[in-house]
Amino acid sequence: MSKTALITGGSSGIGLELAKLFARDGVHLILIASNQDKLNRAIEELSAEFSVQIRGIACDLAAPNALIEAQALFDKLKREEVVVDFLVNNAGFGVYGKFLDSDLARELEMVQLHVAITTLFTKLFARDMAGRGGGRIMNVASTAAFQPGPWMAVYYATKAYMLSYSEAAHESLKGTGVTVTCLCPGPTPTNFQVRAKNSKRGMMKLVCTPVEFVARKGYHALMKGEPLVIPGFLNRCGTIAVRLLPRKWVASLSAKVAENS
Image 1 (cartoon, helix red, strand yellow):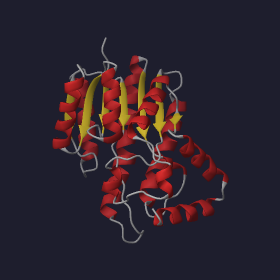
Image 2 (cartoon, rainbow, N blue to C red; image 1 turned 60 degrees about the horizontal axis):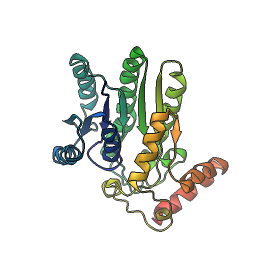
Image 3 (cartoon, rainbow, N blue to C red; image 1 turned 120 degrees about the vertical axis):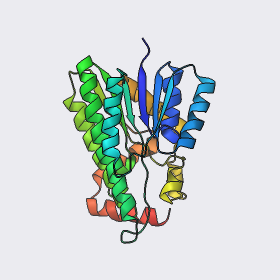
């Protein structure tokens, strides 16, 4: 029997690459994205290569009423008896800038998207999956989750929440057949840097990992039910290093790297 994956932020970047991997394995897709044109192009691209059912839903999960819309979407899928076997909370964006000058409104939208929507979808779909005896959830965080991030303070903080929440959910769901995997990529060449207005170069360029590599590592970890995956050897080393250094040193070092990137 064919399975279905729901992917937020599925029209580009890591989300689109994950969609390709699901489709390759015959998994039907529900893609959620804020931009209808990009969503249509992604569906066209996937439909030309794979013979799976693809449903696109244009919805801005960072908008003020997004929590209500997200709940309504879940309820609609339930009424239609659509079974979601895989959930990928991938949608996200960053805001880069000096702490006092960065766009507060956008940062609050980020909190809603990374924290509230991730919490809502994870809980709703996990309950549904547990009732059926199994399912897989992936929350896409970042290596930023392991440290404070001056110049992108809210982004780093929300990713830390996603990591902590995912690891706790994974442990709490043991015995239900449901697993939660947290994917923590380092800098990955997608349109994310453009939206964040932060073009990485210099030292950060050394730890960049191709989006296809990130998606593949995340997909394999998801299917195995692993709680955490950090693609790239240098990225894994970095997350270990920041846990060994004094916290104030980590924040200061992170600020210097951000200023020069």
